[in-house]
Length: 231
Image 1 (cartoon, rainbow, N blue to C red):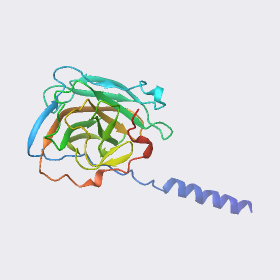
Image 2: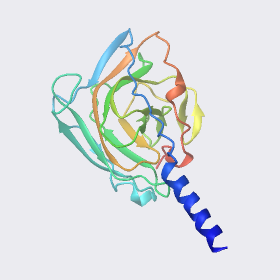
Image 3: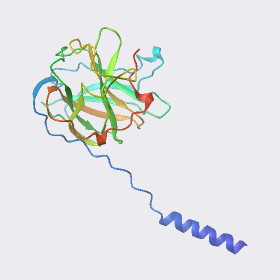
Image 4: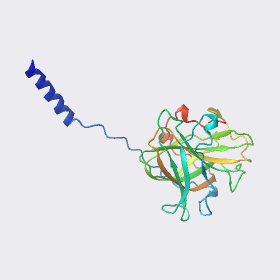
């Protein structure tokens, strides 16, 4: 019996040494062509920092936001010489899984002519990141959010979010922005489970285009906890 136990232990040790763990799935970066159409440059981060991290300001609604800091960086840019550098804490499953960055000083509040918002990102975190866009499109504290997209590690260019399809408010589908001519605040969010880190953002554009949206294959199934909620 002792010899049998030794043999079994040796075989298990050999299997343990020779087994190769499955390779992690590589998430490709988004690299869309520039969509054709009427465009308005909403933010290039060249004139200063008008963005804020939500941080703990939503704690009174029992929704702790994991964003930490919104800064300006000149280490990377796709429009001009500066970009936003946003930092966020680890986002485990038991958390809100939501890091939100907001801007209320918008260069344009009437988004009626546009059907997409297009953004360049540089994901300098260790994980692929799920991101979406939400807007406060009325004087009430009510948000309408786009479908999330999954960014690979590295530069993701011309990431296109539809402003007319797949929208949600309070977790329910809506057909359109309630007041596209009265956008009060823009919010860009990192959602879902990740280890925390940083993301760089630049060249935020509103676009009216007839170009079809790319395949939705990079869109993850959003976790219900990571939806934007009205406060």
